[in-house]
Image 1 (cartoon, rainbow, N blue to C red):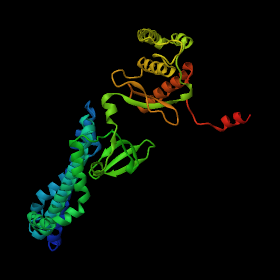
Image 2: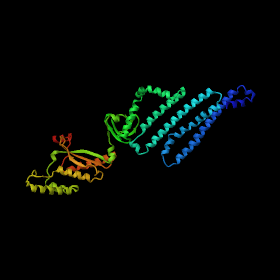
Image 3: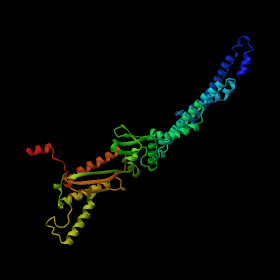
Image 4: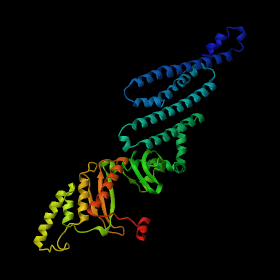
Length: 414
């Protein structure tokens, strides 16, 4: 092409001496114009049409490709391919210049391909997160490993182009640096191994509530990456911990409450032991008017009366034979109340039990599960239940134990 331009310019006598330089300038100018035209056609026509087609589709997943500018990066290949293909023809007669431009173009093409694949990986990982499986099997760590390998290969390719050596030569040299590479990439390697174990064993997933006191972690997992795991604590702070720490250290995963659809209530109230007593006739008559235990009182009274009659128990003293107590009746009432509560799961464990008496009185523990798992409704349900139970204890002539306060001592002084 330069020879054609040279022959054309030499037809003008005044330009004959500068013909080689002018021909070279014209060749470079024409090549640049073609590259720019290829860029314009690719970016504003082809990529523009693809963008409009994506905007018209009903799915939103392909919008991620546009937002990540995957096709925009690909459009940069067009001018480079034009220069690489037409450069030797336009610059014939200048082998050194052709070699330099070809090398530069190949380096540019390599970098653009790396950026394109990087954008494609980012878009693919974001699209994958829109599926339900992404919660139990996150692939961010695998994507990051793929990027490390990609950029390593790209670095070797660019280095081989600059130095004019085969890529195999550099890979052979990397073999001698294995120990150094293992030391430099220790954290990514450990993180990648830990990520595989976490995903394979389903130990933790994005969205899980985990508790790890050794790191001050108590919140939801928002990201599992190659070397780090991010947790948003309930005070809205973000804690970042090494991925391998979830393998090396113990942690509590509250995912089970989501799997079973219930959240546990395990709390005790303490009864003042001095208020526990046998039920007399007046108390039984009063308790029988409580709706939840009306049938229980009748059945239990009939059972105990029959037992005492058969055993010949002396009814003049309440200690003789078997008798109902106010605390036992209160336990029966509490269980009946929970079984009728619309927010308590009836399929999961539900019990009201006594624990060992201690210096704070007799613990009555409630062990049940709500049928909601969200934190705010759960706390509201639990508070409503204990509000009722604490107030109901007085109806059974029971007192809730609490340590003496300054007001109690002032009453004694008066």
